[in-house]
Image (cartoon, rainbow, N blue to C red; front, side, top):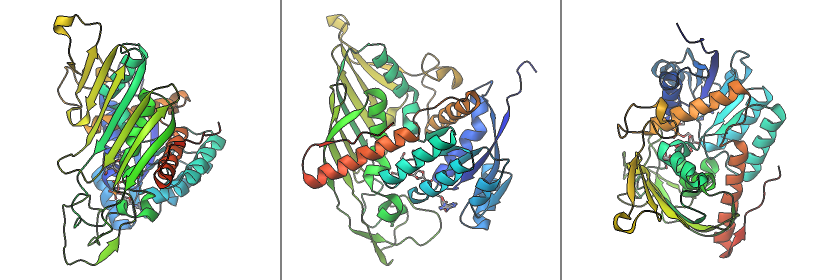
Length: 396
Ligand code: NAI
Ligand code: SOE
């Protein structure tokens, strides 16, 4: 053994659905990629809504035990990390209880269903002095981190324009079931909180603070068949035309113009009803000396254009991310072997544990989650009042 054995840190994960799976994979895989790992995450307890599901989740995701009450995780003095992977309406209550118990917290996005709850969560983690992170994982895609590095190095000059999209089609079919993502009481909002916030996070990460928005929100589908039970269904995979219907009270589509504090302008468009688009997170950034273009559906690639290239070979070139790029050394040995969604969660997990072990802050954290919630408020207000709205500043 040539390496000092990293310390073990016990994790309690709440919610064993889609994100429960993604986070469990990251706990298992993080030390396989990042070695020596900052710490070895030990999957101690997973909480689900009932004990059978919790025990099955424990078996499947490699946890020592499954429990049916998340408070058991908060009360366990041997758990240092609380991971919140439940639907949005429970994030605030769990996170505040976890902070008061002195646990470090990884919370899924959006941080909360309202900016008021997000602010309370931020106050709780600040008061407790615990490491906190909100899981906007897409910024950890190596190509997106490379875009940030190129911008910081001045390779495209001063940024003038950010044009971002997040387009999906899983909710385009109105007979798709009434997921919790269509219910304001649980989700807080629709496309806005669910996916537009990912692009807000990418825009802030790459270009800086957003000062003003000018937005339009649309709501097309007003009711959907109730789900027959069991795990949440994302979209049209299980249709039931004879099922009783329930109300959809969230937005389907968001578009907003942006002004950044640093002087750039931009736009974001997001929909879950765009047939043919799956996880179409794209951005194009124009600077005074060049441009950068990205599409998550081809996430190994970053397209760059440098004005300094000789005229006869000038054009967008494609960089395939690999060991030369952010986090690339920990991932796979040659470019273009294929970065997946899982890798973004593995990098997120590494950075979170690194922050815990070194006692430093990590981004995006609850402050970023709160600022994103304030941007969401401004988008809603702008759409309702049909005018440009200034984003409220977060008190520091
Ligand atoms: P899901 O519906 O697949 O899973 C949620 C699980 O939490 C369910 O199994 C449910 O039974 C369980 N649950 C609900 N209340 C609970 C409670 N009080 N105690 C214990 N378990 C409880 O939902 P999904 O897709 O995993 O979403 C969870 C969170 O992750 C949401 O906030 C969502 O916005 C976010 N998310 C983030 C993604 C990302 O790319 N960062 C991707 C997908 C979801
Ligand atoms: C559904 O729109 C969803 O699962 C979102 O909730 C996630 O945040 C996104 O990353 C993938 O799509």
